[in-house]
Image 1 (cartoon, rainbow, N blue to C red):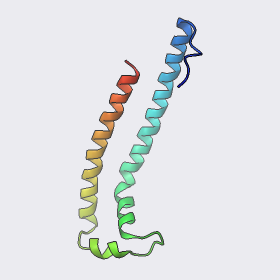
Image 2 (cartoon, rainbow, N blue to C red; image 1 turned 90 degrees about the vertical axis):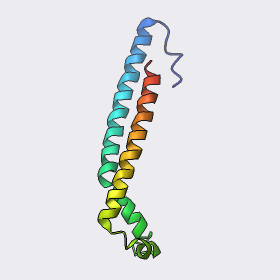
Image 3 (spheres, rainbow, N blue to C red; image 1 turned 30 degrees about the vertical axis):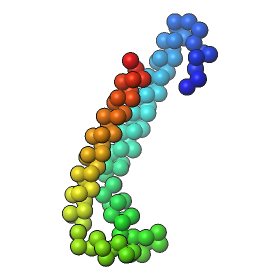
Image 4 (cartoon, one colour; image 1 turned 180 degrees about the horizontal axis):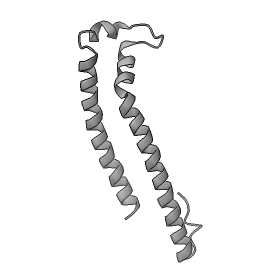
Length: 101
């Protein structure tokens, strides 16, 4: 972010603003792609991390969480993802708003 040496006059400032706007759009697209992937796969990834150890064999957690059932766990994790995503999107929009005042 140390670009102050590049900005000497108004055209160079406008060029830097355009570059930062393109960078923000690219970051937003990457964020959206990663978030969509997380949203699609989070319940299964969380379930696997709770139920299986590093070796892939069932762990002690399997016995403790067995009574919950997959659909109940997916529903709870889905609600958690929606809650966290709302908060995360709010923070990202706030940061972008501060960046492009």
